[in-house]
Length: 477
Image (tube, rainbow, N blue to C red; front, side, top):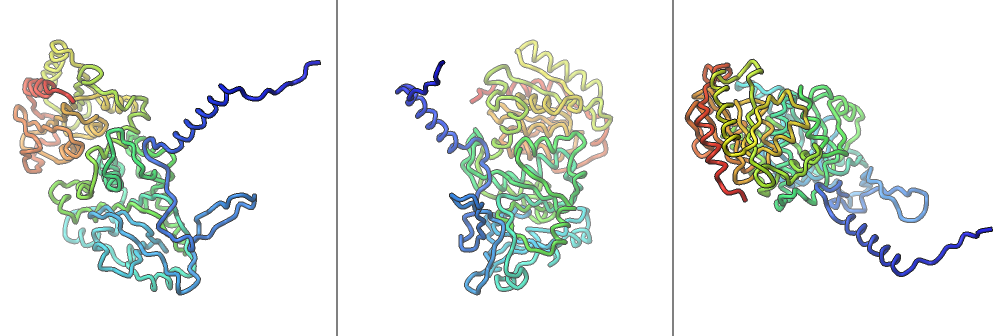
């Protein structure tokens, strides 16, 4: 009968085991993209209820309740970490009965309330509409620690980790551009201000977003018709949880106070009080007043591109030929080029392909899958098209010396949307009125002349081809 014999590990096996353990330790301490959420260091351990798992060994800390049983323990004060109109990072922000509370014994250090929050009603023009958006004590109160103790009672429930609280109506959220290149854009520019050294790889020690709360939007009214919004959010933060208007109301009806560990609080109407918005009509412009890395967007861009199955470092002009992508609206029915100008433009672009070896793509974005759209944009060197939602894909381009966005307008018309977005990402931008071009350095005023939304927008194909040749003659880094 054979007996099972267990020998001691030989020296080589011991060495290999040691190497394996070293690699595992290195991986566990290395950040790839965004880290998972932090445990708060802003609260004294004396405040924390600690629950023992009952299994012996180390004590498991469940940060679920914050008591203060004596006068020696005050309610932890709210800290405004960073602020720009419409974009505020808070530590220890409180919510009770649907009202947000800022707890401080130094109210003079808190930004004005109208630059932090609003009533979140639908945005409209006119003095009465502006007045209707101004916050009251129902939306936010600034109270002392003594007042907070009386309001909240002896304990409070903790919502730990990083929360993004979106205090907007669904009016703009359901649009791909306004979500990805404005609201999400501004959120990440605000949060990334805590790490102004983000490199091109996008790796950052910032804790990952734990949850998003839509305080005024239900679960059916934050997605866009092409379902790009959820792709962007879920591909960037796969572990994210979401709460909506009904959840917000449920928490309010509990009648119990909650303290949010760290919050990125965004409010469109509040951002509209800032000078950045007044000069660009972009609420994200306010967030750019905060510190930040030139590669601030790389974390988001790289996560989304990798989720689409493409290597973040593969882009046109470095590993292969430059890629020109013309986003056509000729089948859209609104805001289209004159048909003859469209045909001439396509002919000129294909001539560039044949004579210079460039890759040329003429696409209708709505005919491509989400993966196809992101993969194409990520490889694109020059993106062009009539002003429209398809141009939002420029946010997945990789900024290089050659990266260029070319936008066609009806002569005399202009809107900041894609110019501001391209400039914020460090890419060259040109607007085009038929055979005339202008850059970010010489922008015309915003205007929507008759013909802006029409189907007879002129563009000179030879002018565009010449511009492409000039941009692609630049030596890439």
